[in-house]
Length: 439
Ligand SMILES: [Zn+2]
Image 1 (cartoon, rainbow, N blue to C red):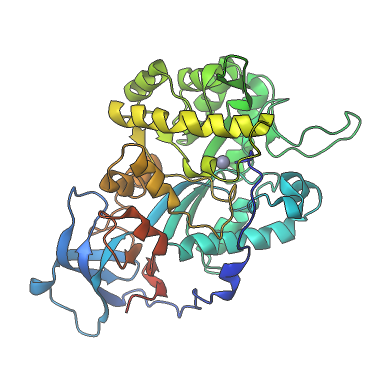
Image 2 (image 1 turned 90 degrees about the vertical axis):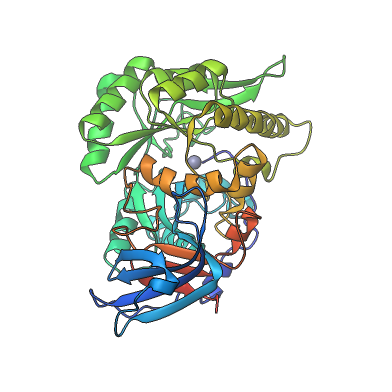
């Protein structure tokens, strides 16, 4: 996140929508049959017509032609025969503890300096609900921005059924170096909190990973670049943070626990150190040079491009921030295009929270298609590919026997117009229906 001053256009609008109704607990063996007019299953290259999806409890039991499907006695039937059914969507880059950094609310700094943890947790729980309401049934939330281990608590509340929300993988505090993360710009005599855990040297770096994993992190997130600017020649330049030795210590420790490392990286030296150090995913990757792309292909490193967030709310033209905002967007598209062409593995991620939770998360699909992905490839990036990044293949991101019953539907054909995904009208997660407006 944490680079955009963004207006929260429709803050709180979902509060009033009443879309997410309280759910009666599902009996473990309860059966639901979903009739799908078209099914994009998350893995297959083409959709299938007229499919019946049998859900038992929280898992998908079978998928087959409606004509030959047997509806078990007592099964509830959900008729989506005029809709396109897909796996629950996956956003692999969210920040439920950010709320669009609205300048009217004091922007980023006020969240750390003036808002207590209980207040932030309430808003985070509403953000989680908002993700689910939009059809995102799994998210990887990539740091709490000063809210400590709050994401572990939200994940626990969702898993316990106390609040509605997506399946969550959390990174807790994230890690950067001295001079590598806000809050910044305060008098040196004043001790201010930092949005990430600050470490220096491989020993501290490894210890931070151990602490975070010990306290419930599913992933480790590090910032391998921090400040960026446009130099006199018009190039985007990014300040590297960690040394290669520090990154290697982090990756080695995380991998030893069977966990992966997400690396926030724009371009340049820091990005290359992240790749040399064995990062599992590059977040943003605004400007991937040819060597970086070749290395990502070779190492199987994922790219989570987060395109759309860089197109919003630019600072005025001619200001240093305005020049930077425009430069970031200008290099990002061609970079994604090159990565797509070269076969870099791409997972859907948006940085939502950096922009308002009231904006459609699925706007990202249009940018992915604009810069070289087919609609089907963009959908798979948010389903089976994202599941692969998260080591959840077969469980999520696919409508197939054995998978969790995380299923969404839209009224139109997203292969003709990916923008239809901005209006998900049916949401089932774990076999429970949270939204049902496609009658
Ligand atoms: Zn982010």
